[in-house]
Amino acid sequence: MKLSKLALVALCAALPGHAAFADASCARPDLEKFIRDSEEDFMKSFASKDTTVLKRILADDFAIVMNDYYLRKDSFIDYVEKGTGKFDESFLGMTEVRIFGDSAVSQGDSGWSRGEKGTPEGGQFSWIDVWVCRDGNWQIAAAQFFTSVGDHP
Image (cartoon, rainbow, N blue to C red; front, side, top):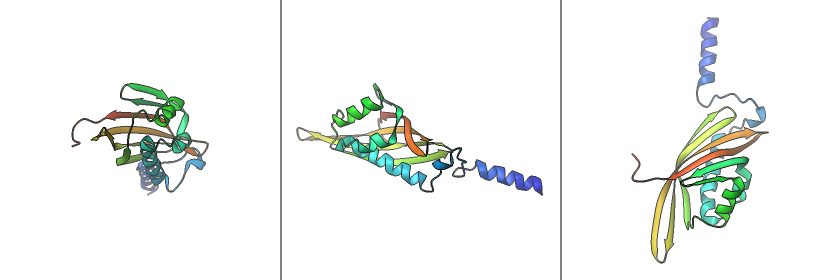
């Protein structure tokens, strides 16, 4: 009987959503919602050029690969503030969040639109972000965005 209880405890600990936190300050009941909401704010910043949320959720050692760009935190914030992408609207699409103790992976897609000289256009990005918790603060340490081609399955 003791062995089966131990096996059950081990199984429950391995299930998604039952991850142990090495740093207790990283545990928060709304973590998945916090990450989803932060991802939505992240996407909206491309159109609004408001980098307040980026300064808060990007780790100091943040790096992003974006199609042909490799940018660190300061360069990426500058890219967004200057409106280099020239988006009129950007929005979050499908998002999946998986939590692994003091780290998490979120991935999904997002859309954008812009209208230059009366010719509207739009597109879609697929992306993946690696979140880490340091000193009780959840931040994105690494990201990759790439332009999606064609319809998703």
